[in-house]
Image 1 (cartoon, rainbow, N blue to C red):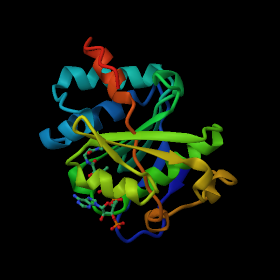
Image 2 (cartoon, rainbow, N blue to C red; image 1 turned 45 degrees about the horizontal axis):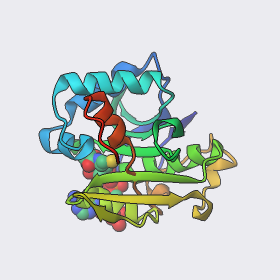
Image 3 (tube, rainbow, N blue to C red; image 1 turned 120 degrees about the vertical axis):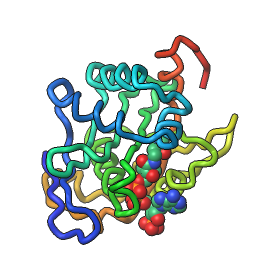
Image 4 (cartoon, rainbow, N blue to C red; image 1 turned 90 degrees about the vertical axis):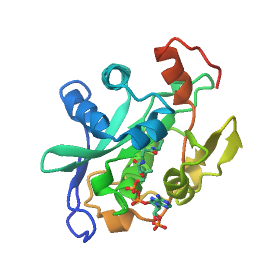
Length: 206
Ligand SMILES: CC(C)(COP(=O)(O)OP(=O)(O)OC[C@H]1O[C@@H](n2cnc3c(N)ncnc32)[C@H](O)[C@@H]1OP(=O)(O)O)[C@@H](O)C(=O)NCCC(=O)NCCS
């Protein structure tokens, strides 16, 4: 499932789903390249390398779908679709990360769009995204896709109703798509923080 970005003038890479086991190092290395602020935003304050390595390994083994933005064989952005079983209320959680060098070029938007297509293909009806209350970039991205974020305990949380999304790729998931074409809708998620906490043995209830 390769989505070649053939027409964008803002980003030059491709977007495709990573194979869970074999391409784990590509995801891990991408997450490890995130700077401190990005790690804080992405992992809710957990920033050390060991945590990120364990997190990437967990994603490779628990059914998480990773949609990656790749430039010259290097993953510069990723969207994560976590299986509903990971969430206490069975809502699939989603998360995004784009390296600084690739930001503000529509990469997050195309990853979001592809993630929604993937979620629709799986039959999911709703997604959840969570981020820090101060994360303006993620809030802007989420708002594009219709997530209504609410504040709670320093976080912004929003649900995405997939029935309201217009996803032509669902019918033809291999169609060519450009970054620009993807800049249309957005939203966020929240529930994997509980999973992150459990990885650290903190057991917080989301
Ligand atoms: C959030 C993130 C994924 C956005 O990626 P991106 O590739 O820059 O996103 P896009 O270029 O598609 O931009 C999406 C929208 O958000 C807006 N936006 C992006 N960064 C912004 C910022 N810092 N402040 C305000 N708006 C911002 C863009 O203008 C765009 O809106 P537009 O289409 O109306 O112009 C990226 O900043 C990131 O990885 N941050 C660190 C990790 C993180 O916070 N993850 C979220 C936790 S799930």
